Length: 125
Image 1 (cartoon, rainbow, N blue to C red):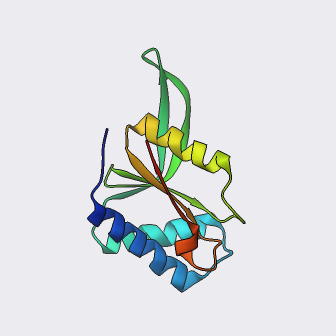
Image 2: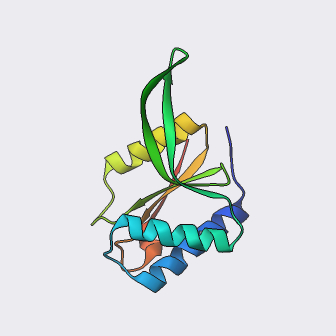
């Protein structure tokens, strides 16, 4: 199970806050995703966008899978939202990604918040 440092988390959340301060609330998720990738690259972090997550069952790739919005340093999964509020399904979605990727921590980031700090939810397995 891959884990990340508190330092990495602080850098990533700082980058997300920078994006939110610049763009504000209410845009499409893809806008925040592209901007956040730029900010993470400025910090020299390896960040993969729309990374495919295969589903393996009994040793077989089922040919269906998911896509994580952003994976940072292969240790932290970010699921971006632009919604009124998080729902249980958002948490379940991120938990599924964490399990399939064997990554311990991730964050739901709701950019449709007045302040991004109110729209951050940590998810761990």
